[in-house]
Image 1 (tube, one colour):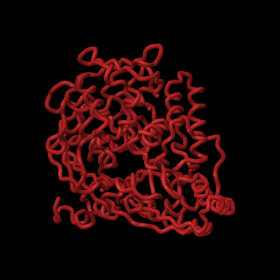
Image 2: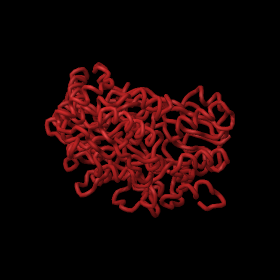
Image 3: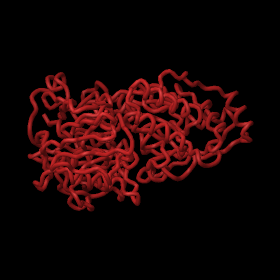
Image 4: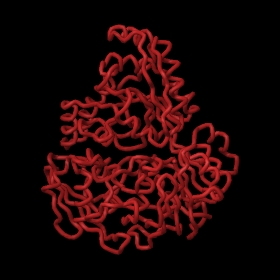
Length: 520
């Protein structure tokens, strides 16, 4: 990418199928829905799509097991496949796995692979899957899906044929298909260790080039098991600033701009120059409190912060109203979400009383934020003003867009946070267990871990939901996530780009599904 081609970009900086009877996701007209295909006209083959994402700077990698940012995930799903992925309803849909079936005690699952090949023509086998999962589970590494794969006894699991695997589990697990769909659980060739030079996957696109923090180019893989993409090529362009992504889209330098802010969307919606796609309420918006250090190691301080927040003011101000309020829990509207808990509202008198009890009157705390995500800086400013009314002084600290997510995972005490869609149980496994690799709140409680294992082992759905309810009641009372809202996920596209799915939350199968779009 050079100044002449992308001047603005260079200058400014990117689940419940449970038996073998599950069926593959149907795609009509390559557009994700019949209505979309009809309104967009006949799909057309050819061309290069240029998609602009916020990125992670020079440290970016194509290692799919390290995928953390949305740009990483979009590139990974273009190059690689998982055994399953999340549908728009967050249930697990078969991908490389053709089917799965448990034994009666739910502690052994037989998975049969479909016929698929890697980009070098070699078949995808059971040994490739086992190698991939064992790599992810390496205790010396911090791969994203490690906690999600924890229920699998990978020493005892084995290939029972070239395309069949018996997964032996450490305990009965009713929702094992969600494990297969875990964020980051991609299948790579056996013994693969290097991914940035010439990665080989089984995804719909194959590698052409990669310049970390700048761009990546992939070409159509004609032998993909789910059919070849319509596009000839896709180029992922990194543009850290939202304004750079918007200007590139308006200037015809890209056809797809990921993550626009609500103000931009309102300005261009219905204007005719570009299309605005809203994926409703698909992004959790939160402040993340580190529960292992002062002042948030005192649950009275955490409760006070819950009560300081005026959630509607945050949604109106930081999201321009493009979302709905949260209740300090992840997954509003998803299966197992504890919708019966009373909606928390601002109570400054109670907050001040709790702070006094905790010896934290006149508290001063730093809030880490960044322009890395839409609404972050606005939310930080609004919350600072809300906290002042309770006698709390918040110092807003701006962080680097390139390193923000890694910086705030272990550092600081309070930060702006967000998440795309995933099942409630996946959020718990990846972020709230003692060994979770992305445990940003440092919530580590062995009895909570035990409840998660109990939920996973409970066959009856109603009983399982009751266990998840107990866990969420505890998080609602004393957890580290102050979830103030759920934002629309906003994407901008050129009018020539067709087939973009409009109902797929971020992180799900049909989000950034570039093998199913076309240029008119």
